[in-house]
Image (cartoon, rainbow, N blue to C red; front, side, top):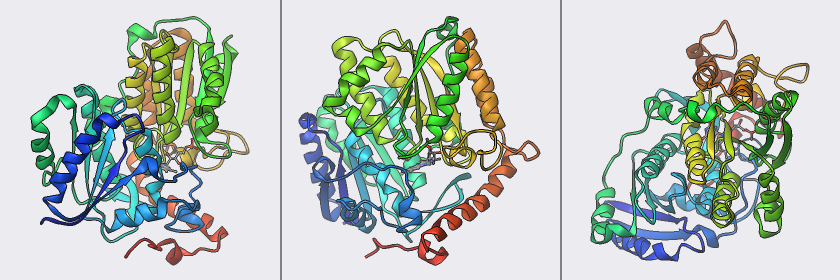
Length: 449
Ligand SMILES: Cc1cc2nc3c(=O)[nH]c(=O)nc-3n(C[C@H](O)[C@H](O)[C@H](O)COP(=O)(O)O)c2cc1C
């Protein structure tokens, strides 16, 4: 026996019964290498989606403020030697069932930042974390999505301090080779994806699709689940202002569980139907779009197959993340691009923003209400993006170069990254103190056995 305890997170949806036999096969392979194997079927659990309040770091350190089935799952997670994720591959990302859980995993790490694999990530909260193995399933093999999925799992493995990871994608066509594929996973150690692997995912727009200079109707879809204002809403709103100043009609909608339930579909589809350009703006949650966006793109893809809702529209994505490196948004942008292209949309490019919480945090990007370091480079990038959309010019390379700069002109980006963890520590501590928590309490690890 190589492992004492293995936990399988089953991310299949209610309509994914055709993959159950693969899960059974995987379980029998796991029983051969572990003393204890248990499976958690996520769709049967009572789980609400993360609303990005950071209460699990500041108010009740190490525990989510929502009381549902999360606590039991995270206890199993942290007590395991290996966690095995089993999920359909959705445009190279995860199923909504798995993503809903994954967004809630941040109580397992500490808010403070540190350097890990030469990048900024959060510090660990626990002494040890399980090895991560992921099995993605597809109806037919699609190497582009499979490779994106493996990259995403590797990125999660860095964020969650796993000692090692392995990821594979299988499909029913693999037939007799499935058992071999699963056995191969038990010990394999895949290389962690680095900056060089992510930069190509931010490819910018294709000049062939961007040379379209006419005003139209733009719909901003805000995918941040925050209760109040969000960076996604502020930056997306700034882009709409620029478009509207040149004669575009603009509209915006914020994703919510209601819109994604049957009673909200008509409203969502109707607003999309009237738009020429969809601007999808969201925060990076565990290296990928948050649950609400994951569910929305699955839903829109289903509707598109029925009615052709998306075909011919242009799609622009704004992904903002907490860490300073904007390129960490690469997998999330690539997932959206895959969704857009599969739906017959034309890709209009992307704006990937690092240090989103520090530079904006839902407050205006400039003026008296702005807090934190100057966000002038975000404003410059927004001007370029608006130009690209309005005049049909492809300025995406400049946009990415601008977003790779330090917000403070006299500081180089490497220096900005050096001071970022110190600024972050100060910020989190002052917020935690408002709830009566000090640095020792912030380190609580309530799920340790
Ligand atoms: C559940 C959760 C997961 C997150 N995961 C990441 C991550 O993987 N990488 C990152 O750089 N930032 C991550 N962040 C930080 C957010 O991307 C960041 O706070 C962002 O600015 C929020 O944008 P919004 O105001 O539009 O919601 C995460 C935040 C939350 C709440």
